[in-house]
Length: 240
Image (cartoon, rainbow, N blue to C red):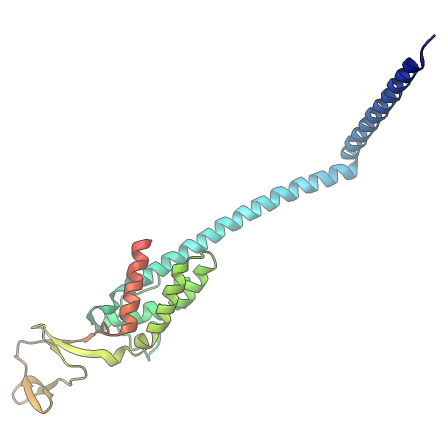
C-alpha cells in the first residue's frame, strides 16, 4: 500500500510529464506549421521577395555610395584646382593671370562674356560640367558629401574677398622692364616726335628709356580680405 506522500509524488511526476509532452507537441506543431508555410506557394513567394528585395537594397545602396564618392571626389578636385589659382591672389600678376583669378572664382564659362574682356587666360575648370559653377557653389555641393568645418571658414573668407575680385581693374598699375613699378592709373603716352614713351606724375614729366617695355600688372596684396583669404587657403592646404 502506497503512502499519501508517495501518491502525491507520483501524481506530480505524471503532471510534469504531461506538461512536457504538451510543450513538445506544441513546439513540434509550430515548427511543422512554419516549415509548411515556407513550403507553400505564398510562403515561397514571400521568402523570395524578402531575399531579392534585401539583395536589391544592398546592391542599390552600394551603387549609390560609389556614385556619391565619385561626385565628392570630382567636386574636391575641382575645388582644389580653383584654389591652386586663387593662391596667387596676393602676387603681382600680369593681366591674363588676373583674369585667371576671376574665372577661378566665377567659373571659366564666364570668360566668353565680352564684359570680362578676357582675350587671353589660362584657367579652365578641371571638369567641364562645373565650368558654370562659382567656387562658392562648388564648395556648397562638396559640403553635402563632406562635413568639414574648414569649408565654413573658407566660404566666409571667399565671400568677403569677392568685392575685391569683382573690381580687378581698380588695382592696375604698370611695370617697366627695369622692375620699376609705376603708380596706379598712370597713363603712359608715346611722343611721336621724340619717339619716346613718357608719363606724368604730379605734373612732372618722366621719360622712359627707348629700350624699356612695360606691361600692366595687378596687385591686391594690401587688401585685408585678400590677405585673410590667402592665409586661410594656406592653412587649408597644410591640413589636407
